[in-house]
Image 1 (tube, helix red, strand yellow):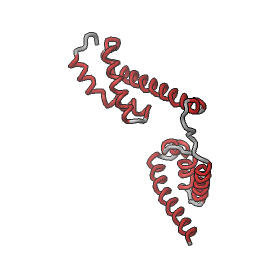
Image 2 (cartoon, one colour):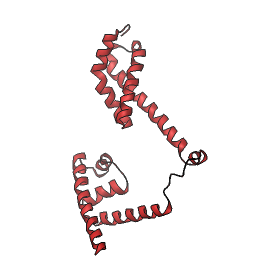
Image 3 (cartoon, rainbow, N blue to C red):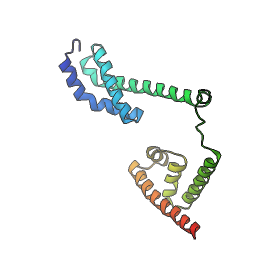
Image 4 (cartoon, rainbow, N blue to C red):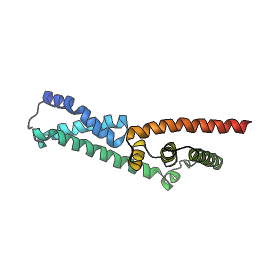
Length: 176
């Protein structure tokens, strides 16, 4: 594609912008960052479009987008880990852990929720335990349990409703 004109590149962008955005979004899971990475992908593509044969433009753009997203994730991870632990304390930042009384309340709440989950019938017990106690996503739960994603999402919604009713019932019992 040597010597691609600006108008031709604009057409290329229109044709592939949704694909590039989707690749970026699936990797970074952040809408704004995916938009930024889509722009960065097309800027890089514009500079290096002469390196790509015309019939291979789609996979080439996907690879550029994936590499941009992976680079972002690497730099994001490095920034986060530098701020964690001793680095944050040495920089004079406050300790991010909650005070002991808040930790106690969180632990008590977690134990109460865990006990309430145990009182639920299947399939709600297993999906809520994985979601709320192990903090897994619906997709991860579907894979773990070998169930369709939509089934897991429905079970999570119904299970949360049952859990909410159960916890509200306990609260009413405590008030009496």
